[in-house]
Length: 208
Image (cartoon, rainbow, N blue to C red; front, side, top):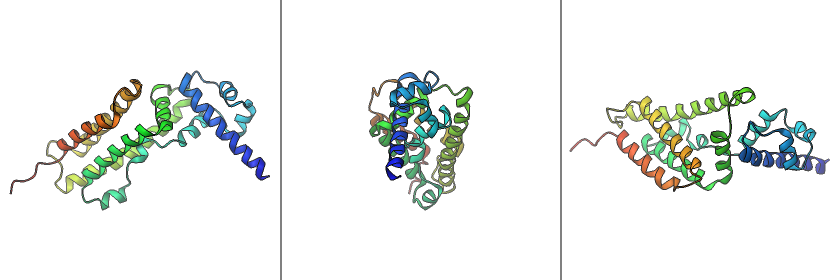
């Protein structure tokens, strides 16, 4: 029984590996379960044993990779931070460092952002991704609200506008890095961008 269970887990892992590779090479809409089965050297029946459909397989593949949204701290850590601006800035840099070093995350992000059309059966996945983004943005917005409450935010920035600007900057940077085939140093360029943004977010020190 133990051997059979181990074999099933190995088959499931092989299917996910094949899905990741096939989605990456062909795009999600052009990838069929038959193509994934061939790449994994299994039958379509073996895929259906583990996954209800392509959407379920896609979701399981995403769950194996840590995404940038998951690098951001929770509300408890933000409440305990001496400076919420420094904490969220450090999180943004940590997210870029993680992406630059993790090949699985790079593949999954490429599939999500550049190889997937969120229509028909994949539309439900888009809703779930938006929900994950909203959870992350809620945390970031809270950090800016807390910074504003403590008098740390520059007067010309609101928590909402700072959250939107940081999100768009990070998303655009990562998207362009993937589109360029990793054509520039993500962390070096990203650090300069994030530092510049947070310099503008922060209120100027009051002269003594």
